[in-house]
Length: 210
Picture 1 (cartoon, rainbow, N blue to C red):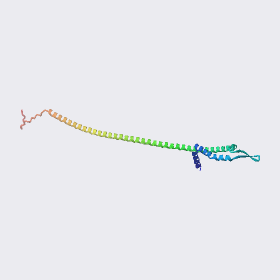
Picture 2 (picture 1 turned 135 degrees about the vertical axis):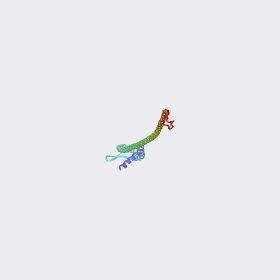
Picture 3 (picture 1 turned 180 degrees about the horizontal axis):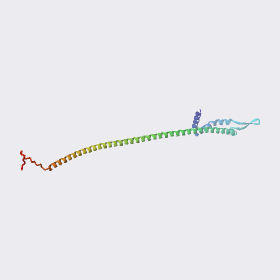
């Protein structure tokens, strides 16, 4: 019920703009004036004085004598109009307040949505940056592993070559040692004096020659 009354006040507040009120007043005056004019032309104001009626006013002069009543009616009309104006003002203020509240709520929702979108975009950018750095790190690790593997192969090849060189050197040393030994033996054989064969002319005679 209160909601329906409030909606009715809001409807009145939306309809009762200053231009509408002025237009309604003008229409009311225009509609009432011919009838009022006709009634005043045939009306007469009589007052009971000393046991008889006494004529006091006729036609438009009645308005002057009816001034207190008119002031009372105008005062009551002003009070009623002020009450209606207050109700309309409150309804319009409530409508404006609800509109501002709705706008503030909408701005808050938009700001929250924008904030969520910005946070989502920021997270997406950070995630993309992390993925890029992860790929870069993986590439660096792969390059380092490849270089380490190449270095290991080179080290193995160098070790194999060193071992082969050592083996060849050992063989050369052995050949050199053998050659030196053979040369030394050959040299010693050449330095020994020739053997004298005292029995070279031995013919079976045990008597030595003289």
